[in-house]
Image (cartoon, rainbow, N blue to C red; front, side):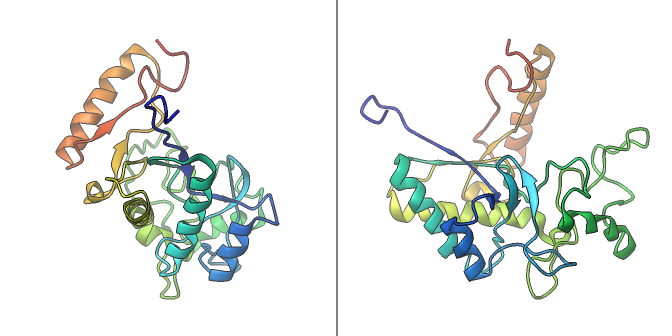
Length: 238
């Protein structure tokens, strides 16, 4: 690919699969104690996304650079990438039944602590559509991120922001070229390290205008390098 002028940019998800118990990265994450923990069990919180049972690295942990750099180095030796596409880069879950995994079932206790999963207002919320709530597709908002009791609810946007920052520093130091990093999740000032991808858009013609307006909106937000999947992603492409 490189000989033909192509550039390989792999998609890297946020979750760390624990299906392989002998994974060197899982062992390293546990030894460095950089795995996000349940606020109830005080053990690594287990979720479930594309690779199956999953844990998440905590980018607020000062030791995260050692872990992330090791993982990117292993990947670079395999595929010689030129940039990184950071997808699914918030701690999430694809579980429909939150009681499926032991750590997840405690999620329902959140409403008894801070009521943080049922705020008065959440973007996109409609009283007639109960599926719109803050914790949809998210691990418990009460999950611990550090010893100061900072939770996912307090600092979720910082996780993807710091992931982008650490990834930028790795590419800048090792590939020696201006880093090319696409990110699914961004916040104000993310442009310093990453560009923005609008996520899984639909393939209907009527959805094109939403992709275009999304690009213009992110220009206003201060992230001019923004784009969507060409021809869409969900349903048949036009």
